[in-house]
Structure formats: structure tokens, C-alpha cells
Length: 102
Image (cartoon, rainbow, N blue to C red):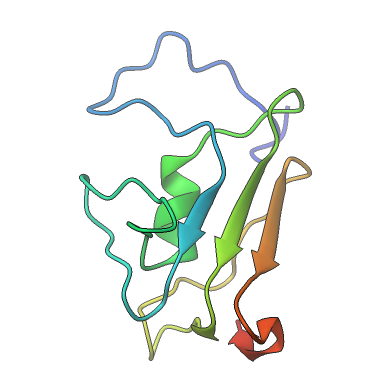
């Protein structure tokens, strides 16, 4: 098993359940707080925070939708590099997805 592969976290404890559905990130209007749910109306601020809140598997892949904007340490505090597993997709959205820059 590698760090990027699926693990067994059944004996783990935490303050919140992992998110197992697609989520949204907005580098301007998002928030990285425990009450942020990652919906299109309540997006996360950074990909890294969203990545820590989700649990993707081979049977349940997840997409992180990226609203337009700049994702970097200097603009929204984004952590680089971004680790992507085979069960995770990043998709730029908005009127001009080409304006989503990591």
C-alpha cells in the first residue's frame, strides 16, 4: 500500500465525517473552516483543504470543481504540490475554465 492508495480508516476517529461527494473550491469567495461543506454555494477556499475533507475510493471517485481564479500560495494560500490519486479529478468550471490557473 502506498500513501496515495486507499487505506482502511475504519478504526479512526475524527471530529467530522469525510465528504464522499463532489465538492467545489473558490479561490476568492471560498472558506476553509470546519463548517464549510464544499457545495457550489458554500465552497472551500483551497484545493488542499478540500483534499483533506474528502474520501475518494475506486467505487466512489470524487471531482473537485474549481471556480475561476488563481490557485497559489500568494493568492489564496494554496499548498503546492497538489497530490492527485487515480480516484480524484480536478475540473475547472465557469464561463471561461481556461482562467482557472494553478
